[in-house]
Image (tube, rainbow, N blue to C red; front, side):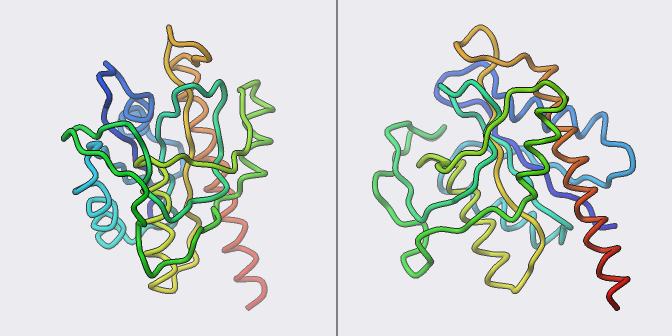
Length: 209
């Protein structure tokens, strides 16, 4: 089986840590039994982040893409439904750059929908006692940008592999925080659920053939 590409971001906006970086480092070190993984940690810089993601997709040719990022102010794991074609935030990247109201691709569609098995992921996380919900807005920063860029590239090359974005809540002591151990456990469940869905899809495809 080809690997699942899992990405996270470095700390930004003066934060000491980013839970998505912790999650990706945990997955790289511990792995997920029975699942091939390829991980990338991306710096929060507008001018390079998207290119790094596309290079990873082209190099790895993954079975699926799951991007993790931090959503401050949210108190649950957010499984993002949509990526919209706009960069728009008052938060500076790690190079000090801002983007306000700039289309990601002037010729691209207004939005893409996640192709991850969100309902199955939500059910698995809830069954594990973890706070989770589906979300209709991935924001206007690099998280949404990453989500859009991944789906846009995969659509352009005719790939139907699952791809999408998961927002993680902050780490303690921020309001709405979720401990790092719980976030790593959530990431493992997300990957296991996705791997199961891919396996079921391939099995059904073989039977149909």
